[in-house]
Length: 82
Image (cartoon, rainbow, N blue to C red; front, side):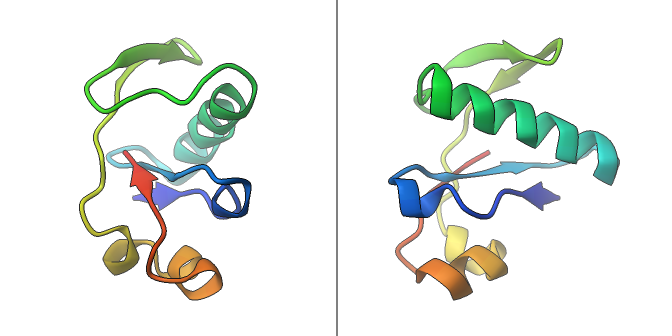
C-alpha cells in the first residue's frame, strides 16, 4: 500500500491506495490529492475518475494503525480514505 503524508494539517484525510506498483501508486495519490484539494473531498461510497482510473472511496476505520508516518506526525486522530 501507499499513502499520503501532509493532508491532515489542512483538515483533510490522508489518502491510501492498495494493489498498485509503488510508482504508479504514487502518481495516482498525487492526482487524487490534487483532486481533493482543488475540486472536492469525495464521500465514502462515491466513485470518481482520476488519471483514467475509476476509484471508489472507502473510509479507513483505524488509519493510525496503518499510516504510521502520518500518525506519528499528526497524532492518532488522523482520518483517511482509501
